[in-house]
Amino acid sequence: MNDRQIPILDLSPQYQSIKSEIYAAIDRVLESGQFIMGQDVKAFEQETAKYLGVKYAIAVNSGTDALIIGLRALGIGAGDEVITTPFSFFATAESISNVGAKPVFVDIDARTFNIDPAKIVEKISDRTKAIMPVHLYGNPAAMAQIIDIAQAHNLKVIEDCAQSFGAKYYGHCSNCGDACAESTRSAIAGKMVGAIGDVGAFSFFPSKNLGAYGDGGLIATNDETVAELAKMLRVHGAKKKYHNEILGYNSRLDTLQAAILRVKLPYIDQWNQGRSFVAKTYNQLLADIADIITPELADGHVFHQYTIRVLNGKRDQLASFLAASGINTMIYYPVPQDRLPIYAGQYALNPVSDELSDQVLSLPIWAELSYENIEFIANKIRSCLQGA
Image 1 (cartoon, rainbow, N blue to C red):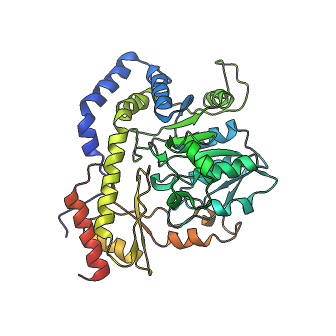
Image 2 (cartoon, rainbow, N blue to C red):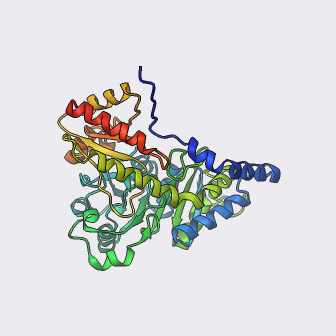
Image 3 (tube, rainbow, N blue to C red):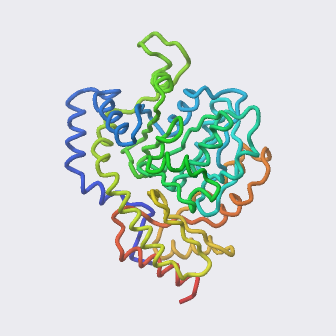
């Protein structure tokens, strides 16, 4: 029995550092008696819009709803196609299917785990209406190339930012490929993800870099028409109460969650820097170990997950060894979206995505993870794979 136990994520150090502020925020809401769409929701939307550099931020009750409402606000629906990545959590494709459109999967770049822009154009059809890149694990997708393709084909872009709050796009060639248009890259370099496309959709699930103490989500946009439609859709399709104009949803962010997120928002850059430091430390300690490939340290990457590739069929062996050593790991994702039972048999192979689903292993990461524990994890990986 191993005495040391290292979870995949430990939120307790973060909570202890802001505990008094959290208590004060919760007490403020309880005293107000406004638990749905209260003042803290409005304030959080304003503060988040300013942080992201967008005109409008619309709070909703989950990242999944942010995608669904974002798609509908862009006019995506029955008979349309939306190009996206097979290598993501099901909410990505599910949101497309739930608005009546068809997800069209484009394989990924093995370096970034994100959609490969060089393979997008061949999947565009007369029915294609949008591209939905995912900034997986907190690593910005190849937005310059994606924006160029979208503009050339009159497509909308909705960014799935569920794992990437606070990430910035810089567009170095290691991140987006040599063919990336220099003018577009220069125009959007330094922008926050979610502020580049027509819509950005964020999740505040508790494990996210900016996490609530329950579910939560946000839609970001610079388009007033999209923003107004999103505001209607989140409250049963009404601009005015009891005057419903379209079919909508009950998708309001709780005031308590907004108040908690307001406490956390000023710390997000500090916490993301901590995650980046952990990732750099991992990369240094794992650099000379055979049979693994460490993730790239791209500028702007906020490392929601630190995910290695374990080669030569050794992933499951390593995961079991680490578990026996008290180290919790996760596989994000063991089955690509296009291989899930709901879509089985409907799509051609995406070989890179399929290969990586058998290789990826996410290691523990949070801003306060100690060097001692990182070194312990690295040594256990070395012991398993090198027998040292």
